[in-house]
Length: 489
Image 1 (cartoon, rainbow, N blue to C red):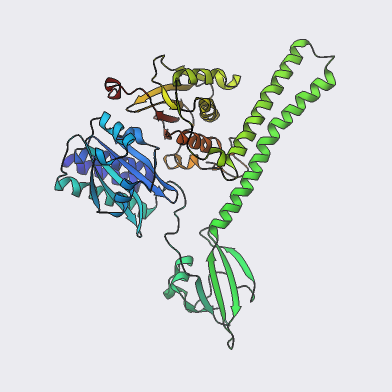
Image 2: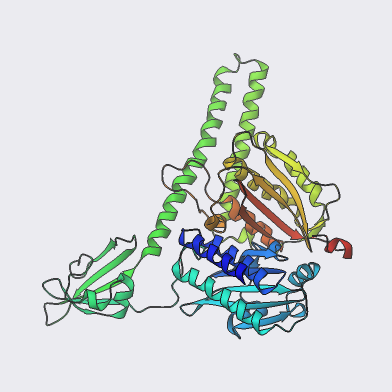
C-alpha cells in the first residue's frame, strides 16, 4: 500500500508538472495492472469514428494502435451496460482472445470512463485465472477509471485525437441588445458559446461587435474561436436580436484546405523543377557532356520522376472518397521476411543506404497483401530518415507476438511528442505548420500506412523511443500458429 501511494503521488507530481495526458494515462494503466494484480491492462479512447487502444502494459502491450469497432457486441456491452463488466475469453472476438490466451490470460475486467454523458474510453485489466472478480478488484478498476476521467475533464492534451467533438446538438445562442449596445437578454446557449454566464453578460456590452441588421460577420474571440454574428431588428422596439454561432470548425477545415494546397504545390514544385533542370541540361549540353555525365543526369531524372509518381499516387489515394483504400483486402499467406528484404532493395538509393536490416530467415508467414509491404515500408523509412539524426541508421527489425507477426522501423531523431502519436495518422496533419516548417511532406504517408494495414486486419502504432527517436510498429495476422510458437512472446 505504501508503494501504491508513493507511485500515485509521483503520478500527481507528473501531471502537475504539465506532462502530456497520454504519458499520464500510460502510467495509470501500468499502475492499475500492478495494483490490481493483473497481468496486463489497456485503455481504449473513443472518437466520433470509433475507438483505438492508446495505452497498454504487460500481456496486452501488443494491442497499442489497434482499432476498436464501436458496433462490436462486446464494445456495446462495455460502453452501455453495467459500470464494471467481467468478460471471459469465449465472449471476446476470436483474434483478440487468441492473442490474450497465448499470454496466459483467462478473463478481463473492464469499466468505462464518461465525460458530460459521453463515453470517452474504456479501461481493461487482464487476469490469468477464471475469476470471478473480487470486490477489491472492481473497486480498484473503478478508482483508476475515475482518475483517468479527471484527466479528460482537465484537458491536458486529451483526447489525443485532437478537438473534442460537441457532445450534442445545441440551440442557437441568442442575445437581445438594446440601443445603447448593452445586453438585455442572454440565453444558456449564449453563455456556453461565449463562455460568459448571464450574470456577467447582462447589462454590459456584447463581447463582439454587433453588425448592421441583416448582415452576418465572422469575428474571432480572444481564445482563438470564431463566431458568426447575425443581427436583426426587433419590430416595435429599438432593440436588436443577435444570433451567435460557433464556426470554428468550418474555419479550421478551410485553413486545412489552404495548407494542403500550399504544401502540395511546394512538394510538387521541387521534383518538377529538378526534372526540368536535368532535362534542360541534357538538351542544351548533350554534346559537351561525357557519357558518365549523361548517365548521371538520366539516373537523376528517373529518380525524381519516381518520387513525383509516388507523391501523386499518395495524393490520389488519400483525397476524394477514399474508395481506393476502402473495403477488406484479398489476404493470402506470404513470406513477410522475404517481402521486407525485397522492399528494402527497391528503396531509393538515399533511403536504402540508411536502413540497417535485422530480419531472420525463419520469420512466420503473414496473412495479407504482399504487394503493399513495399509501400508501407517506404513510407515508414522515408518518415524515419526525414527526422533521424544525420549519420544514424534507421533500424528495421521483426516482431512475433501471439497470433501476429510484423516489423519495427526505429530511428534516433527528434522524436515524437506523446500527444502526437495518434494525430500523426490523421490525413494532412502536420506537427509543424505555417511557412517555417523544417520538414517537407503533405501529411499523407502515415495516414496511408494505417489505411493499408487495417484493410488487412492488422494495425500500426507509433511510440516515442527512449533516449530519443520514434518506433513505428506494424502487425499483421500470422498463418502458422503452432502451440509452441504462439506462447513465445
